[in-house]
Length: 120
Image 1 (cartoon, helix red, strand yellow):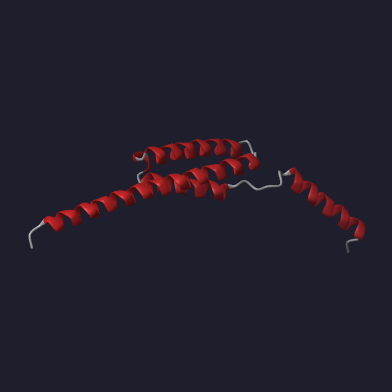
Image 2: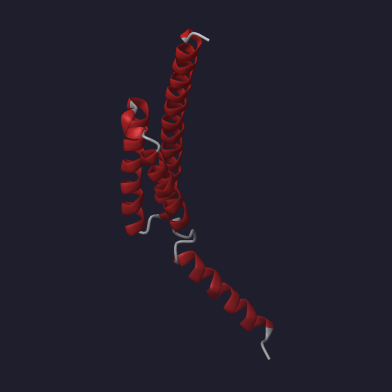
């Protein structure tokens, strides 16, 4: 049977162990999410749009820095860099998709114009 004094000692040791392990877990799920968004931006044509390409490069640079922070076991720095990478990847994806939508609208408008000029 545990005595109260033993229980307090064990609880204290567990707390010290948890604090010594860095506290915050490595953000590997955020790393995966950011990489996935970068891939989606590339597939959406971000490289063909100057603004989207800029944010894509920034996201890739931040991912590389985040990976370095993860390797150094600096979870706080990694979290910050992954948040920045995710934001830049999201922006790149939105810009790439927006450019694609504009081109699709322009193509549709050109078809409508061509059809309206045909004799009926």
